[in-house]
Image (tube, rainbow, N blue to C red; front, side, top):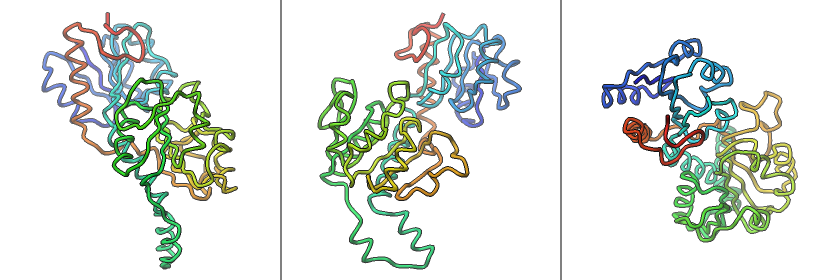
Amino acid sequence: MKLVFYATKYRKMIDGVGRDFPDIEVVSIKEPKDVAAAVAGADIFITTNSAYTPEVAEIVREKGTALRWMHFTNSGIDYALESGVPPMVAVTNSSAGRARAVATHAMTLLLALVRRLPDCAAAAQRHEWPRTEMNRDVDTLDKKTMALIGLGAIGQDIARKAKAFDMRVIGISGIAEAAHVDELRPRERLHETLAEADVVMLATAYDPSTHHIIDAKALAAMKPSALIVNIARGPMIEEAALIAALKAGQIRGAGLDVTEIEPPPADSPLWDAPNLVLTPHSAGGGGDDAVLFDILSEHLRLFRARKPFARVLSGPTLPA
C-alpha cells in the first residue's frame, strides 16, 4: 500500500505514519513538480486545502488512477473540492483537528474589538495614554447575545467559550441539538436573529447557499452597536457592503481572519476600514498536531480493515 503525503509541514505526522504503519510505503513530497511521479500507483493521497491547487488537482485526476482515498489535514476543503477530485475516490478531512485553535482565534478577534485593543496599540505607538476615552468606550461580553452561524466542531467550541463569558448563544443551524447553545434557529430566521444579536459569528461551511450570507440587507438588520467576526470563508460577507457599513457607523466593528481575495490587493479599502481587525487567515495556526495525527490514524485503521469511514465529503464511504 502506497501513501503520498503532499504538504509543506506536518513532519511529525509523516514520521508517525511511518512508525505506526510500517506496512505502508510513505512518500513525502513538497513541490508541485513531484506530484505526478509520486501519485502514480498510490492508494492514498494526503494533502491540505491550500496545497491542492487547480494545477495539482489536474495532475492527481490524470495520474492518480489507482487512488482510493484522499485525506485533507484541515477542516475547510471547499477550494479543493472546487478544484476537483478523482471520481469514486473517498474524500475525508480532519474536521475537528483545529477546532479549538480556530475558536480561540474567533474569541480573540471578538475580545480585541470589545476591549478596543487595536486603538490601545495605536495610541501606544503615538506615545499617548487615552485612559478616560478607553474606560468610557470599552465593553464586556456578559449578558450579550451571540448569533452563531454554523455549529460544526468549530462552532460548538466557540459556543462553549462564549458561555464561559456569560453570553447568550443563538445557533443558526440545521442540527437538532447542540451543547452550550441557548436556542437553535433555522437559517430562515437569520435576519430576525441578526436584529437581536450583539455579536454575529460566522463559523459555517462555505457553499453557494452561504455566499454573501451577510450582505447589505443583513448588515442593515444588525444593531448599530453590533460586532461581526468571520473565521470561516471570506466570500460569506459582501465586503463592499461591510466596508460601507463600517464607514457609515452602521455597525460597531468587524474582525476578519478571511477575505474575499487573499491577500487583499494593496489598494483594497479593507486595509483602511475603520473599526476593523484583520488577521491573515491564521486562525488555524497553533494547537496540537497530535490531534490531527490521531484523526488520520483512525482513518488509516478503518481503511486497512476495509471498514467504511464515518463521514466523507465526496465519493464512497467504503473505498473500493
